[in-house]
View 1 (cartoon, rainbow, N blue to C red):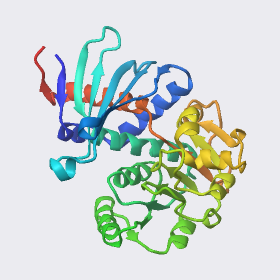
View 2: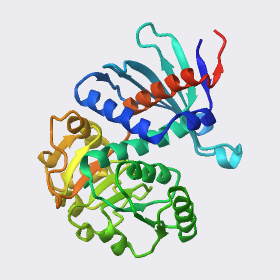
View 3: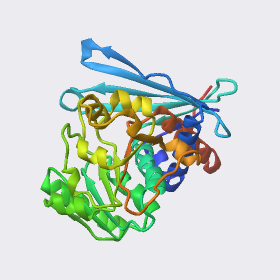
View 4: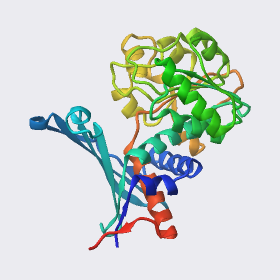
Length: 328
């Protein structure tokens, strides 16, 4: 019997360490050619100023899972209907016979799996002794990005850079209480960048957030905020200094301004891209090779991450007797 899982169900079942492991395996299978990942469909609903996105994927290997994330984007919702502009659900199927297994709220799951991708990158690319993290952004994605790197590295201090001083300070206080380490908002961007062993960008900025010259040797960067070829959170100098790793190179070359813009300007060539993270997880390409190396991970978000995490949530729900059984 299929299950319905609410946002609360997902939150009670899905831990960040488990999500990181699931996403790492999905990346490995992606780079090994054991997934199916078609382009997402974006259908306009012009009459109501909305759109529907469908993001299907199949993940093979021992995980063997199939599903589709369905997202609606209705920009007028907050003002006209007191509803979120973005809403979504994930539909999980049995890959063997096509049976419906579960339907679950996709917002929290997406936020956690996106954080988990940064955790995978930190596991393979950040220095083992990384102790200072700096995060740009204090919005909905920021807590999960921070939690993921704290799961993977011995973080002792966090700097927060936010365009809203009030929001940044509130976020810093919340994270300090949650993780029991010093977390402080700052307006000193050069200091925050220069202090970072791990630097996270999780903003909606279309222009670079800092000068790449400020990065200290050995820094690792997780860039997850921008996903448009015309937008970038980091400058060309950062990319030139760094060993560049992608979640999927073809997707990043289509959607990631951090790479598209310097490529178009002739500041780098495609040979500057070191590997996909899945190749590193599989051991086919090296991760970090020296303490002084600057590493850069770019993620634009992939449906295989959703499928892998949704399968994990459904398995945990069955084991715990969680969720609501849907009538057939």
